[in-house]
Length: 432
Ligand SMILES: NC(=O)c1ccc[n+]([C@@H]2O[C@H](COP(=O)([O-])OP(=O)(O)OC[C@H]3O[C@@H](n4cnc5c(N)ncnc54)[C@H](O)[C@@H]3O)[C@@H](O)[C@H]2O)c1
Ligand SMILES: [Zn+2]
Ligand SMILES: [Zn+2]
Image 1 (cartoon, rainbow, N blue to C red):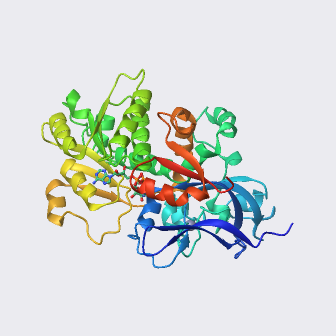
Image 2: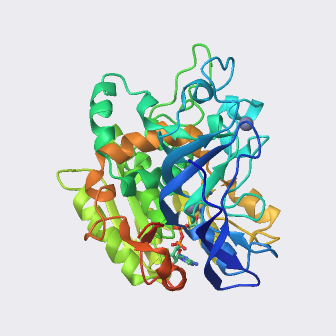
């Protein structure tokens, strides 16, 4: 069968706010490690908005989108059964296989990929940029596809005893649910994981004072001093930004608290009332039959009083930032307590951050920034996706993360609405 000459895609044009649906060239295999994927669904993400608003520094038009699930229609010559010493997909991936793509390319073979720091792969590229056309298209070229893509059939989940259950559940997952794995759910899980495993939050999550709380400490014969009070180990946490990523971060943090039986108080902050209400409904659902912990949604103004009241003016142990602007970072610094940590997953394009070295020093604040290593976080995100199908399984419901699935003809309107916070997560069906 010969491939078509062109295809439909959603394009962004500089300088800003210009989205067009146009015919572009059908993607071709350019390197033996490439795969061509027929896109079944593509996501619209807060990260697309940085490009949309013209703040990402791009000057050339590009095919948008970095979240897509689809089916392999063509493979480069590196894919063959005798492929050796390479990621397993090079010897097993077949035309017709269903695949999920992380939002960045990762080779699976370099030092960073081997360590699990896949977002900083030596071959890393971001889909939806001029150099790597994105997934809001009917077809997309995936570089280093044997290291980048997931084929669900092969997923081995590192949870003892649950593998069988996962194998039963995974084939039932809808494409709209699987799409959460391209970016927003791993990123939410990553934010919560980074914050709750930070040495500065371990005293609260392990009930051992610092530094005995850290397993890396080997003080032979030394006893952790006792005397922690019950309220010392209640983890106070703020999540700033309740777009799809911030909501996933809240869900991932709640899941960790409930699974580990931890006490917590979480304030979830956004300036958008509709987003706060959505998270409040999600929390009511998730917290059913849970006795510990408390989540409160708040406006920016209210969040300061809430944190002050909860902590006697001390502040939060950890603050997750999922917005991507300096006003959110300033609030994070205000809310974090001395010896606390700020985990920021928002994409920042400002040339400065809104705190000085002295301010960081005087509060002993740890800063954690950057892109999610989706490929590495995938098993944890998949596990949560399977267990929380009440949130991630449906479309357009009261507590659904995905708001709607639309055709390309609605792209311009959807970018505008999502940018203004008038809708939640939107998916594009290129064949609708
Ligand atoms: N680190 C990563 O790997 C990664 C992955 C995906 C997305 N992101 C980034 O995460 C951020 C969130 O993504 P999203 O899809 O949820 O986007 P989004 O734009 O839908 O969500 C941002 C939310 O922040 C709120 N907001 C804006 N300014 C605020 C402020 N000063 N204080 C509190 N809330 C504020 C908005 O009302 C909105 O609800 C974006 O910056 C996106 O680029 C990063
Ligand atoms: Zn994204
Ligand atoms: Zn790599």
